[in-house]
Length: 352
Image 1 (cartoon, rainbow, N blue to C red):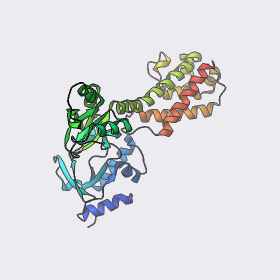
Image 2: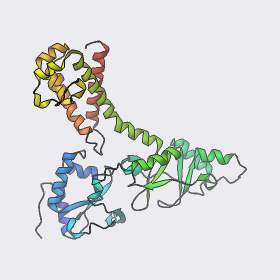
Image 3: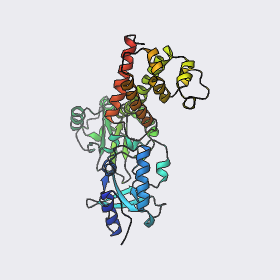
Image 4: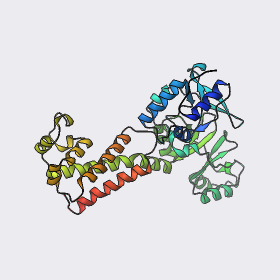
């Protein structure tokens, strides 16, 4: 059977399997992205990938755009399925896995899913209700856990044991030393639930169990995980804010609005420019690139090199402001940190 060909060799293999009636071999989203020689799901990368998938008449199950980057996905031919289907079955490694069928509508939903957090995708360690309290305590101490799910299988949760539940029940006279006597009711949400719905539970209980589409408990998200997640999300924004504030101070201390208008193309400036704070990051770079402005600022640095570094920061800034689902590359994060440190250091030594 003739069908469209792709420049991506791996996609051609997927097409060959699908058109021969086979199930395409599942791959992680990270691997799938690498087929296109990209690492992050930026808007431009997603557009390129979507154009290719649409041209080939295939799609990923589940949708690759809004879940954890190491989630396995498989593929299907789009004109052979009903887009209203809620659940799909695929076979991977001789095991039937129930997946939620996500249509394109899922990618249009702006909600940040709790399933994007790495720990939501790592099956938790658990103990059975008949395990000894000593066993549970040993595991919690050895692995620095604050709580431990009590389960009889990957899908069946009986409760949660925690330092709080142990402490509260130790006050009584209960002589039973099995886990079932020291556990509380558990808290859980779907892997596709909004992150903010999970926050409310975590604030009250310090954790929430994550249930996957196949009904297995696929992870546990704790207050520590949330702290790391928000640090990862907020750090680039805070660094960009520091850099922009520093540049605003550098330019505002020596360059007047008239200087800016005289040295910059009016088409590149805000229509109602009255203060340096009205300028964009790109404006800052344009202002500093002008030799007259650079001379007035008086920084004993190479102008071209400095502005080139700022252009890279501007590109990273644009990437960050698109709120991509994947964390910033370490290389780019270090660039933000380094420029922020440089500008702060210049202020400390009164260079401007």
